[in-house]
Every structure is written in C-alpha cells, then in structure tokens.
Image (cartoon, rainbow, N blue to C red):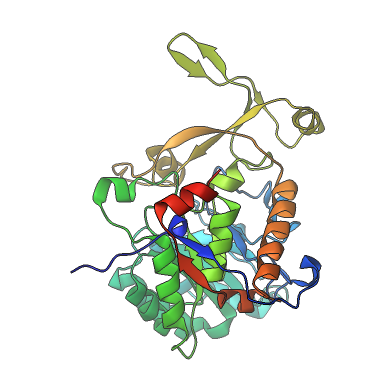
Length: 362
C-alpha cells in the first residue's frame, strides 16, 4: 500500500507547554549571514539587475534568472546574490575552461561564486556528475545550489555529491503546470520533513530550499518549522510593487475581455505615491517554462509549455511584506519557545482534519 503524504494545510504547529520568551523581539529570525531564510525565485517577472537592491536591502537572498548569454553578472562573491545557469551554461563557464579560476587569482574582489544550476529535472544523473566535478574543481570557493527534485533520496544523493543547497519541490508553484500535466510531484510538507530527517544523518547536509507552492505567511512558517533552511518565493514577490514584472494601471474591462491599462514605471516616485494612496496596479507574471520565457532565455527549440502567464494585482511593497513576515515568524517562534531558526525546526507539529483546517481558514 502506498504511504500517504501531506501538505501544509494538513498540519499545525503546536505551542510549547511553557515558553520562557517574554517578547517576540527575543526571537532571531535571521540566519548566520544576517539574512532572512527567504530567496527570490529566479523568475524574470520577479527579479533582475534593476531591482535586486530592493530585496538585498530587506535581507532577502537574490537569485537571478537564467539569461541567454553569459555576462559579467554571471559571477559574484557577494553573499546572498546567486546567478542561475542551465546545465550547458554552467559547463561552459565553470567546467570547460579555467576562466573563473583565473579571475579569482587576478581579481581581489572575486573570491567565491554563488551559483544555481537551474533545471526542471534535478534527478538526472548528468546533474549529479556535474556537482561532483564542480565541487572537486572549486571546493569551498563555489557555493552551489541545484534542483529541482521531488524525491527525498535524490536530496541525499546530491547532498553526498557536494551540493551546498538543493531546491526541493516540483509542480507546486502557482505558475507551474508540471504536476497538472504529468502527474509528477510530492506533497511539499512531507518532502521537507523527509529531507530534513535525512539531513540529520549526513556529515555535510545540503541546505533545504523549499521551492514552489508557498501561498501564505503560514505556509512559509510551517515550511521552516518542518526543516527547510530557506523558502524560495515567486508569485508572492511578483505581487510586490517593486518586482520587475511589467506593471500596469488598473485593467480596462470590456465586454467579453480584459486588457491591461497603461504601463507605468513601478520605481518612480509618482507610481509609489499613487499606490500608497490607493491606486490599483497589476503585474505580469509567468512561469519560466512558458514559451515566452523560453524565448527570452534564448532556447533554440521551444518546448511544450508547463507554465502559465497571468496578471497579478499589486498588494504590497517588499518592505511592507517583510515587516509582516518578521512579525509573524517571530510570533510563531515565541509560541514554540524557539529562540532561533534551528530551534524552530524542532517544534512539535500535529496532523489535523479537513474540518479543523476549515475552522482556522478564514
């Protein structure tokens, strides 16, 4: 009989019997780098070189989407700033030449690389081989994130190969249709929990990055309590005014269809003031496997889309969202007597019925 798996709506976090935390301000919601356990999804309607400072200034790890041509932005020694590559791009830049090794020798400011090998199917043996070879070549000078995977044993395998961070989750993203169209997937809450249990037995466990299907503050807090080291966020950040998605005034509704209003500069003072005073704006949002995104990445062959494109209403600023997240996370930590994120992973969780969830869901 197949084992049943569960997702965030199926569990709740239990308060500690006694908490010695007097104020939520005593809870440290930052990691060892002084950053939030949050990463941007590498999506071209979320983050680019023009807006990543908004995320960095709010202690969020910035992960750039893949680009068609390798550029100067494809290396970095800045903590929390990742560049994404296809498998072939990574091989070209990191493995088939010593360009970056030479750069590290000649450039005093370039001593470490933070890279993501961004592929849909992280279970390929080719990825495992590249991780092994890359870590042999670069060692600790390369902080390598890979994924996505949706099998706990693949997390173990890539971790043993030397990956520093592994994105887990397939098909859960709001702009992803992979599970809908293929039937492939793994409920995220179970996946995080099982990867976390595996990580306890590893000498050098890779960081667990929960990617996709995180719809609310509660989902993200539950993910961290289950063992995720980071939550990777796409749609939620697209709904922030400062995301790089094309931004429009309120849609014009006509009989039978809706078309975007006037496009605006979301970074202008005029737009920021208008949003503050209640003007509605909308953002273009698309999955990175959509045909449009494939074209922007320079794909020679356009594959069947496993993503969607839609318009999201702008709901907040990045700073406003972060302020709320910090308050909600520290509050949850105070209930569970967790002074830091490591302690929070060991908080008690319980399964609940659908009726119990409906009572809490408002």
